[in-house]
Image 1 (cartoon, rainbow, N blue to C red):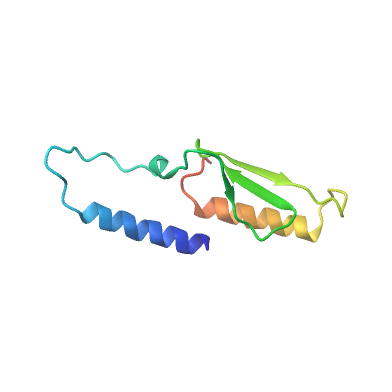
Image 2: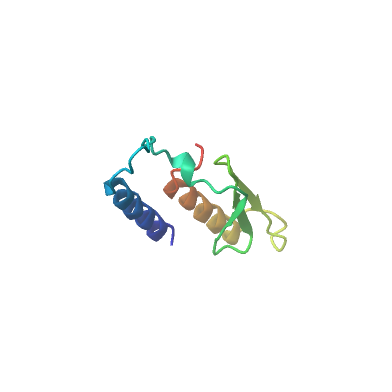
Length: 96
């Protein structure tokens, strides 16, 4: 899903970049910051024990709660952390 979103965003940016500039409008430098959401947005993950929220400043808050494993490093927790970090790696708007 993340790869599809990235591909779609890239395609749209290329199409927008090829549009003629309107008279009197100055073209601004296109930076990833313009793609950030205005409000905190939950990131959709398959994990049931890890949740993530993207904030407007490019910050991602990751919460890890595996009550059945008493918050130890269970298989589900490791998979969830791997999933969220893969998402973060594929999204250039997040801070590093």
